[in-house]
Image (cartoon, rainbow, N blue to C red; front, side, top):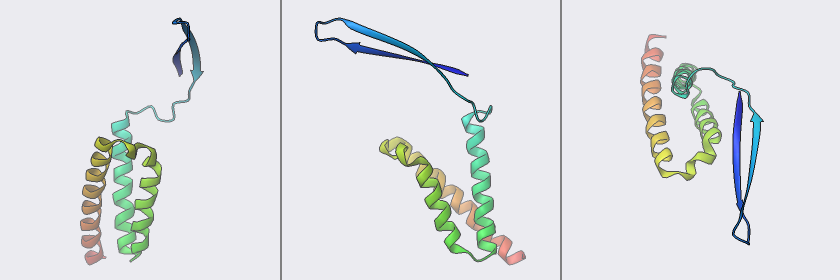
Length: 106
């Protein structure tokens, strides 16, 4: 996959200088970002359940830190931060509830 970048520099004399570069990028996943996000969410909830069954509450803190580290740069945008927080909290609640149920059954 190739990505084209166009940079326009404004000169002091009022003119412009245009630089066009083509960068080869690798596509790690061929799926849409939404599908990848749902896979990450399922894995997150599965890990929460496993940590709860194994009574490893420190695993929950590790998981939260890992997610935050992966998205740290994007927290500069308030809208993304709110979206991330809602998604993380709702996913955690679902995972914790499933963990409680699984602990009772196990």
